[in-house]
Image (tube, rainbow, N blue to C red):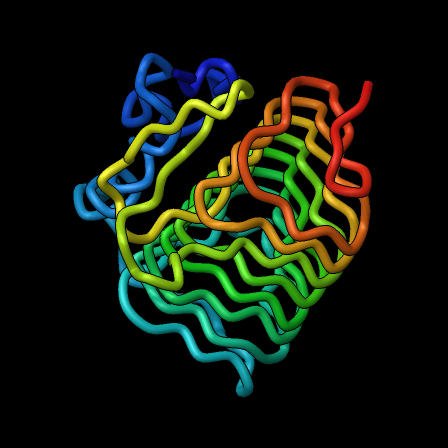
Length: 221
């Protein structure tokens, strides 16, 4: 099965690099997010906060990040340098965001790691997921994180061999430079390897290989 190094690079500047070993399976990073933030030395949040923005709990937002006029940010949460927070962003805790990212209007995030340069600009749900460097989610992308029967999520390799992760809530593992079209639903445990593409409007399950395209529920180079 896959390792995190198959999906992601971690820059030397990423402040939590040592907390996320590349030799682990990428879904094993999901419980590390909460653990990592629980040991982070958060200082009191002392910036002026716009009247329509609620900030609760342990939150770090880099000084270069402009605070949106309204939204809800609940810690623990770490947001890196030059990231853009658009009005209406909803953060429910256990979120780590790298530098130069976009967290968009009416987007909801929880228990997720977002690496440098990733963009989630419009109307998305991202829970219990990992989003790679410079990955891009089109408007309305949903990272579904809970099976209908609420059993632990399985992941599949490209040969459809399954592995039970033992994790009840697991969204998507989205590799570096992945492009996802508008109104895509990624079913729990979806694995998208680097530079893969999902065309708009699809419901995707399973694994999409490096530089492959999911098109009409098929994969092609």
